[in-house]
Length: 425
Image (tube, rainbow, N blue to C red; front, side, top):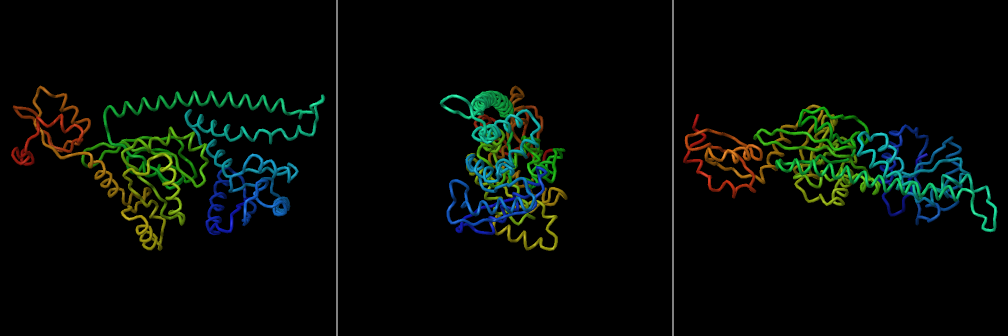
């Protein structure tokens, strides 16, 4: 049974949309959904989120429908979970959206870093909920005047073990993060513009990376298919190379502990020069998904970056195509309608990426003496060379070069019209 509790001030359709999304999340982990309930309350109650009468009614409905799990769209405290399960005489498992997302992340994690991040998030989630696992021992009583629960000693041992494991995971994760930073610094020694592909889960980010770069990154029609950042080189028509990175997808009510655990992964969006924000044009919740992505980017401090919004999956719109695209373009002016599957709009996106990367570049023509081939090599590494010609007095190069090296090249700048580079064979 899926349960969404909302207040009268909340919009009912939003609660229904979140419940639809929760159903998709639950089915992703392989749990069949038998029934759903939307509950409106005037004020959330601390003990059960709803009044005890309504809670008993929900438990009775779940048992009558043959459910053995109740999944709340709302975030439950450990005490609320225990209270709900006690109300159902421990016959029903009660979990929330956070636990479902943690399970999905656990299934999808492939690399060592992702596994460490997921395990850390799961342990931090479970630590305050350990008491729930030992409720079966509460019926037994220990001897002595204090009359402590029999399970208390084991509970304390487990808590200590989990805290020790959390500390070790954080140490291992910091080592992995340092390794990633070393790799990033190594990339930055040869400065190349970088872009991060961000967006809601299952919007088509991996498919877009494949369409742009010709790579074969795993791209599946399922939630959170990608947890690890994957970087690929994109060669633009200008001759400039760009590194694009596919990042983990976002979802509404993404647990903060997962955002914290995956910050090392999401930092690719923070350190990139620009963002490609992918929206599923065929999803009626595209606007809400865009807002969720913006919120996470704001939390990471990356909301102010140059951003290209792309409306993906336009090939799936059918007869409503013009109407849907027209509406989305009014909401997101300047967005590019594309289809990563068919290749529609990919050329226009490459041009837009080229325009963004060239903002930090300036058109120059330089005559580099033969004694300074180190500068020629630097120009080729960091710039976009349009034309090059060897002459008796040096190497004549025309192209777009990073503004930051203009001072280094200033002694060798020449007037392009004077040398007529474009007319030379």
